[in-house]
Image (cartoon, rainbow, N blue to C red):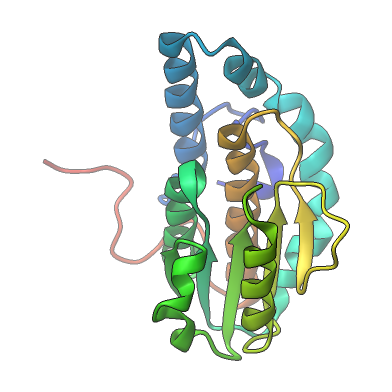
Length: 218
């Protein structure tokens, strides 16, 4: 799979087909399908409309982020931490797993402020931290990012809110989808592209991780 050539909903040359064992495009499509079914079952018309609007937003967003994400991927880090809360935490955990599968880097996911309770000691100069911010308490999140930035220069902030306050790190504003659950798909796209570009930079095949097969045997 080539994340840079597909939208978060997988609409590209082949809608949900994965060339890669890692199945990054399939994960995005499975999530989008499940979210759509949940919106239908719950009568959430606004959420469903937000989901249907992703392809149009992706056509503008994804190409514009190539340079920033490639720069992040090219930096000298050797492990990654992904921080996210609430409904998008599940996709953030999948994003952390992508580092192991795509670019063979050790990685973990933590809830944003839980990072202070132990995980912070594992963040060092060689750690890439990707923080998917929420629209919650901005002051607490900004304070955490400042502490993270004091430990590592490799900080990518994926922001889901308009914010004039200067934040440390490289900041990418996610599209306003009208739904935090839909916006999280763009966060996963950014993580997958960083992993893919980092794999290429260090001479690792991003599509064929050792020890994984493209199917599950029961």
